[in-house]
Image: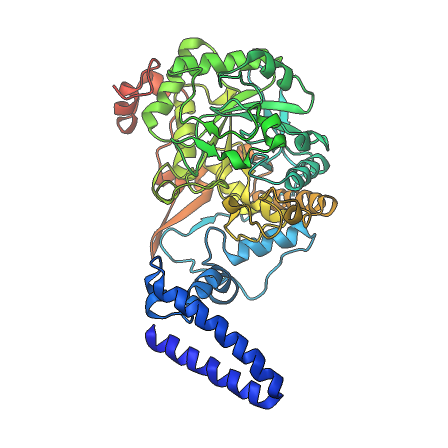
Length: 528
């Protein structure tokens, strides 16, 4: 480090002297002023105590901080390969951008991925593919207790709140949803004017803060809820139990960010810290959860009502299923969020080490519902790194009925994966409340891109299913998705995982489920 900085500083001095000598006398005055400024910076660096590197290498040590600032961009644009970027690699980002712009994303010369690597997954095509259906499949959401079922698309906008997203981003996503005929989840931040402006179908998400339906003390307000959920634009209501990026913790919006618009939308005081508790106050047991879901459905006039969670304990999932049986009603849908998902900022420990990945979460929820005889009345949504057509097909095989996407939809409106969403410095205006930054996002153009991306991706999923010999998602089977478990061996999902039969847990739980089933209690979320 020291040698690098010494060489760099020497080169800078030599170049400066050569420039001054070549230009003329006035350049020496300029050079002298620059030298004085540098001496001032050096003096400050030597006496400051915050950065050790600047005390040892005054002035030139600032190059280290400059390079550190530029590192993400240098990594993304010049170093990473097409297939190894995170969270989304270059190939996937390019696919989203091209589809959003209406460009067909064909590639030449074959895959760059190691198809023999352990963990690589692939779909099994049919020797006798079927014709692509004329009508894109949709999913009817609404169980026997639902008066107003909703026809859900195979790919929808996942939960992202106004406040996390800019007004123009919300506008573009909702207008794109309206143009394309798919749903837009509001996130837990409430229904803003920007959600309502363009008429797109909404899934209203309610979190532990009950924003948009809360009393002054932060409790659930049934009157406000009934008023908001009665809007024609609200097609479904989703209760958020947890989310993939940070399951098990709440959120805090600093007082400085609670401006007049956000305060009005959330129903909180302007300029005061806005807190989402980790746990809900309206229920504390699985039975109370199911009873509250039923109450929300009744208050909404019979609209499809469900909940979203990142799966933790399988015992808790089974306890919720037992509560459905005990209460005699069930949610109309369950959205499973994977721990790999999350557009919101979260502590690194939570992002990397807490929560169940989407694959295992889906398999747990799907099998629990099948084993308790409830699967036919509850639709399952999947949310977590869904970006391409194969992602949709894969999640349908794993137990979902439909999918939601957040980050890919952000890319469709211009997100460049700068990964500074929480700073308010988003360079393309997607995740900022700064008017100067958000004006870069043109609603008319970006809403068309959202529609294009969703339509092309769903169409690709339908074409993949046709190649697999399937004309309807309900015909997909676990045998059609394989995973490499070694360099020379692969197994289907039918072989890798247990798949319960309808009602099996009620009759004779298999050994792999019996212990969790025995511990599950509809009266508590804690294992007994």
